[in-house]
Amino acid sequence: MSKQMRGSIILLLASIIWGFAFVAQSEGMETTGPFTFQASRMLLAFAVLLPASAIIQGVKRKRGIDAHKFMPKKLILCAMISGVFLFIASAFQQVGMQYTSVGHAGFLTALYLLMIPFLGLFVGRRVSVKLWICIALALGGLWLLCMTSEGFAMNKGDLLMLGAAFFFSFQIMSLDILAKNFDGVQYSAIQMLTAGLISLVCTFVFEEPTISESGRRAARSATRE
Image (cartoon, rainbow, N blue to C red; front, side, top):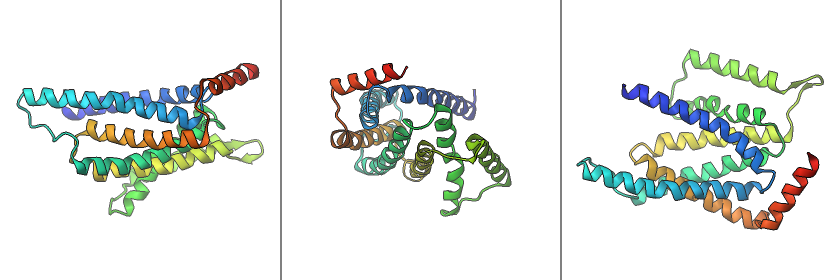
């Protein structure tokens, strides 16, 4: 299997997991606050990625493969920048999940794929005619998604999802510019840690991260059902 084919399969798998995550995020809002949920998932990701990175580094060295330096200062700084964008984008998305459907959330967040080419124009990236056509089709899909009997309408959750798409596009651009020369797993670990710690601070500022609060949310959800 070629390297390009293997990369495409991995990206397809990542897309599938990404799509299923919206359901989990929506369900999570029934029992926890958005920042509590976000801090938990980001810090859990860091807890998994950090030892995984150390293990990968050790295996590479045993096999005589030139491994990246473990957590150099420049990597930490660059990953923290991406982590800030990740926090902002994820916060828009997680809060917005409370006010819109999973289908709307998935489609509107995916519009970052269209925003990235526009941002690329500012750094000298060319956009092909094929991509402009795809952008036009996606905007048509947005129109159909938000069209109601009373006309084009977007609720608060939809607008928050557009905000998430906007900041996700900055986060992805930061990866393209800053993460090229670093180990991907290490970079992701610091990025998740940064987003998780900021989310944790917001949890204690804006929410009540207690078992009793989760219980009250679950009770309200059961009452609505």
